[in-house]
Image (cartoon, rainbow, N blue to C red; front, side):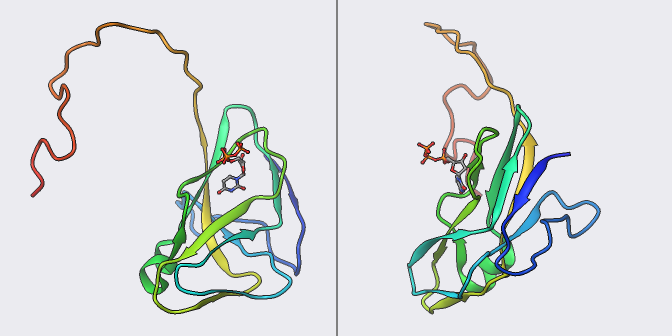
Length: 145
Ligand SMILES: O=c1ccn([C@H]2C[C@H](O)[C@@H](COP(=O)(O)OP(=O)(O)OP(=O)(O)O)O2)c(=O)[nH]1
């Protein structure tokens, strides 16, 4: 169980998994009034959510594909990272990449949040790295079609 505090402008439900196999929970805009983004405008949209993630967990804030494909609305810093020690309000940095203005209403589902485990690593400085089949190949080295 993860501690969550919600400050609602209206009665939004807690984020939940829409289907039994969903990886992400949708996040809703928590607004006193709608926000209109002109083409290429961006804004930090408040969610009203404050969380206490356990140590070793992070939350990733990702765009919703429907909003991106149909409306050109995405996130500027995707995926946004919520650290386990963050106690502030979760914000979603939204940008309008369409040519038309887009209005975000209170309660609208604007992004999704995936909670996952991660590991912190320690560096071992080295002069030589191990050889692999890929080596230094990248950026299309195996072909692009
Ligand atoms: O999309 C996001 C990204 C971040 N955060 C919050 C939670 C996160 O733990 C904190 C810091 O995020 P990040 O490390 O990406 O910010 P920074 O630009 O490196 O700033 P800081 O110096 O505060 O770490 O801001 C959000 O609410 N939404």
